[in-house]
Amino acid sequence: MSCIFCRIASAEIPAEVVAQDGYALAFLDIAPLADGHTVVVPRRHVATLEEMPPAEIEALFRMVAHLSGPVRRAVGAAGSTIGVNNGAATGQTIPHVHVHIVPRWDDDGAGSVHTIFRPGSRRPVGEVGKEIRKALA
Ligand code: 5GP
Ligand code: ZN
Image 1 (cartoon, helix red, strand yellow):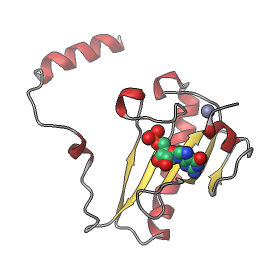
Image 2 (cartoon, helix red, strand yellow; image 1 turned 180 degrees about the vertical axis):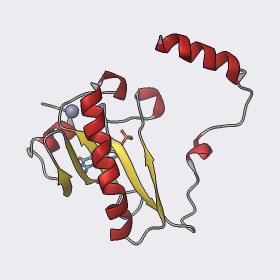
Image 3 (spheres, rainbow, N blue to C red; image 1 turned 30 degrees about the vertical axis):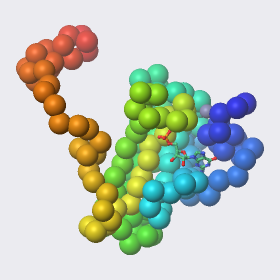
Image 4 (cartoon, rainbow, N blue to C red; image 1 turned 90 degrees about the horizontal axis):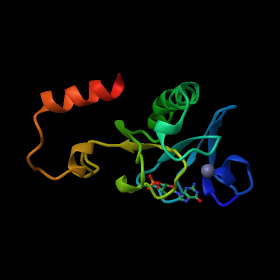
């Protein structure tokens, strides 16, 4: 088993685990972007959110919701950025789904998720919305 998060989930390698249940596990990031930076992962190996069945996604995000307040309060943060790098093109370095919970402060100097992206022209939202509704059908 070479996946680092699978090895953490099976307790083969150590991690600072803060919560776990039958579907998901939460532990502190080894290279925290801020104090309290937590990652929440499904126990089962899966690379992207799209590949997860709804029950597993529900369990994953239930744990994220359960943890976001306690993680924030534990380090005295004012808020948190919660995000998923979903696929290699996004910078996902470990191909095992994980949700980052990164505590934030008013003066921490980090930007919002909007700061990831460069300004530029985009296709009309009406046109793109039509294609997404078609893909859903
Ligand atoms: P990604 O860039 O794939 O969204 O995030 C992967 C995260 O996993 C990074 O923030 C990285 O610091 C963290 N990470 C990588 N290896 C380990 C490890 O062995 N243990 C823990 N706790 N976190 C890890
Ligand atoms: Zn894995």
